[in-house]
Image (cartoon, rainbow, N blue to C red; front, side):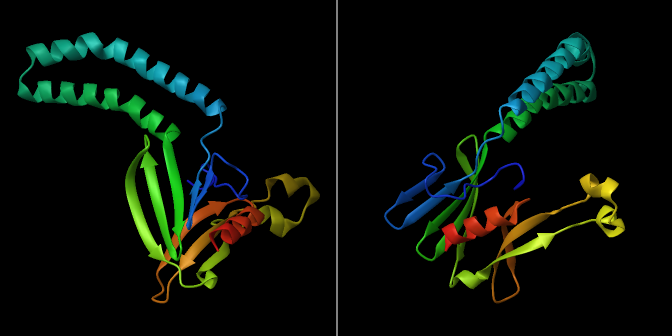
Amino acid sequence: MGLMYVFPVARDEEDFVIEKDQTLILKTYGLPYIFWIYALCIVAVISFMFLAIQAPILKLIELGDSTDATLGYGLLGTIGMMPLLVLGFFFYEKRLIKINDELKVQHRLFAIPVLTSSYNIENTNQLTIEPFLDSPNVARLKNDEDSVGFQNKGYYVLWLNFKDSKRVRLDRHSRKVDLEKLKVLLS
């Protein structure tokens, strides 16, 4: 999700970079406001779906046997969870918390820490930036002026490497310069 949830790259971004004593907290930006319009449209469609199937499902639950009731409740539960899933994308936040030589990667959903992982950084050489391109760049191989806009530029990944060949992906971005600035912030 690094291409959607971007980390700040400068210390002067007060809302997303918090510095206290020996602690540095980097919080991802939220999604752009245009996505809220998408979310509103998705929730509206789900609401219309619920209104269309509400009466038949409730009748199925009321008149059917236990299997039909289970299926009806399952369907109503699924439709009820869909708006929460959509809103979860908007209230997701990833944090990088650096305390001295310890780096915590924390995932939050609705401001509640859901998953936290801790890693020790022994030196800054453990942080590496590598290009990632998962498809052949045919437009660039042809080197045609008409296909310049179709060139797959890929993205870059910021890795935290360990001696035992274990790797942890901290972030990914379409701009290598931003990942280099993030690496400097974490150093």
